[in-house]
Image 1 (cartoon, one colour):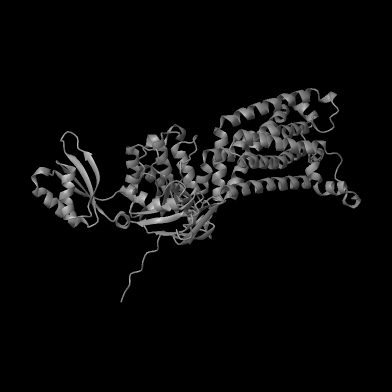
Image 2 (image 1 turned 60 degrees about the vertical axis):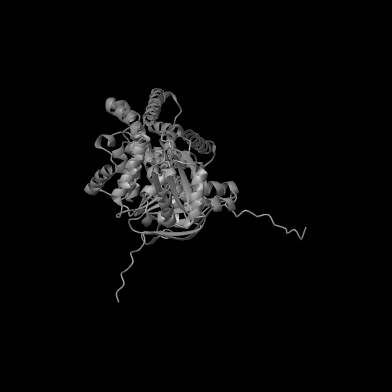
Length: 345
Length: 259
């Protein structure tokens, strides 16, 4: 019997904890990232995302727990770990008085690149980040936010890192600039692992293989979008665009599925029709039989039917809601008021 | 070592492209040149007992609190203000390389300005050889002594400046702090009386203090030795210790910023 050796994960985090004064920023998180994976790191403000990213990039130490990057323990060989990592800090600080190419040259030297390899890598990252030659001659202080962000990403890719950590890479960028960042990640998919923190959920949804949702220093959800949809949204949601009375429509649908509930009712412009959104706990098969029944009834004149998947925003809100309600502002569990029974009174 | 050299080069480049450095250097050297000219002209009527070259060294040492802040205040304060210290620390650069690289750059620039100042007597010697010879500018040992004295004090002064820059995000505050610390140190040295007593005659605490830390407190008095080419190794050693002390503090501060 032969067993295929499982490749080592690029990032292994085990029970990582970090405290800032009285605030417990991380409460023992564990996760791993495989080679070439693009992982989205989500969470509300103060959830501990940036702290985790800063620990992984060797900027700050963890209080306890284990973090390995490319098999190298961060606590033991911090300098070695930094050689495998490209890091784009939140707000992307850059020196204003250097030209793009001067800055990349300086950063390449710091990362141990020299000679023709350095020149070649600079050329490659400029190309990956869609920075043309004339852009690279401009002073960083004169660049727009989008260009600056691309310079930061180019820097993070310089030394052919195996893991690229991007802390809010598309914040404040216009859709075109965000698309360039996404394109860059797509281009490197499979070769480089990305750990991407962002508040722009649609973007994470579009480009990440897997998501980790953090709240109050704890991982509250982890998996692919499909996994998260299954875990957090039990019901199947479908939309119907039709004519007719809402009450009548509901009555017909309830005859087939009594668990089906109308959750939204919006008018559709010009046509006079309405868009009804229903949720059922009985799965997509029931939704399809509802469609069949509605098509038989002339008065509804169904023109659109769609089973919709809940988006990441819905999942994110569900995943973080419970945790958010259970914690106080210092990240401690809230004390629940004692419930005294009527008898004791 | 490679990272240190990269930082050193980048910092030197930063100093060379900064207009503030040129403005500060120009004014400093201009004032020094005017002072030196008046001193040389009135040398015969003064009761100055040291060689005339020592006056230039004294001018450079006492002018350093005005010059050093311009060379050092930017180093860490600006990085902290922009947040680039974090990106710098995400590369394989250690805080020691970072601090020593930045210190070396400002120290070398200080020595460059001292070198420019040493061109004044050199020019005088070239243009008016007789007068230059009368003023003792042909005595090679005086040049060496003066230069070593400046090297020793420049090392500790720039370390103080680097430390001041590491404790704040504001360049102006860093500059003021550096100026204050250097002026305070020069005042202690200028107003301390007496000389280091021989070890066998230590009777009081003040004698012990002078014997152990004499070169710190009386460092300026040693200029009379350096001025005639007598190298006081103790003074050089003590200035290096002082420089190392402030650089260690700066390194600790940079480490602390990351934690």
